[in-house]
Length: 183
Image (cartoon, rainbow, N blue to C red):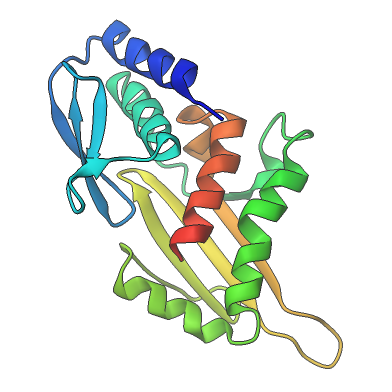
C-alpha cells in the first residue's frame, strides 16, 4: 500500500507553514535528515530512506512544530480519552497493547531494558513503567502490570493530553504501533 498522497500532503503542509530548509530531527532513538529538494527523509544511522510511516509522522510533527509546539499539559490520557477515537480503539489495542503484552507480559520489569536504546526514564507507576520522549515535547508513558492469581498481565500506553494538538487520532494510533515496535 502506497503512502505517496500522505507524503506529498505532508511536504506541502511544511512548505505552506514556511518550513523550507533541510533539517535533522530525532524520532525515538533515530536521527533523520530532511531534504526539501528531493522531498526525502533519510535515516542517518542507516543512510537509507525512512520508511513511509516514519516519514509521515516526522512531517506531521514538524508541521505542528512550525506552528508552535503546545506546552505539555502534564496530564496523562489514554487513547480512549482522546476525542474521536471510536473507529481506532481496536486498531490501537492490536498495534500497541498486544505487542507490549506479548513481549513483556511475563516479565514487566524487563521493560526497563528498553531505556538502554530509547530516550526516556523510568516511571514509578504500575509494576514497571517508562516515559519515552518520542519527539521533543511528545512523551508517551508505557505501563505494565504483571499477572497474579486473579488477573492476567495488563499494559497501557498513555500520552500527554497535548498530543491531540500535535497529531490527529489516526496518527496517534500509528505512532503507538511504532512505539510498541521500538520497545
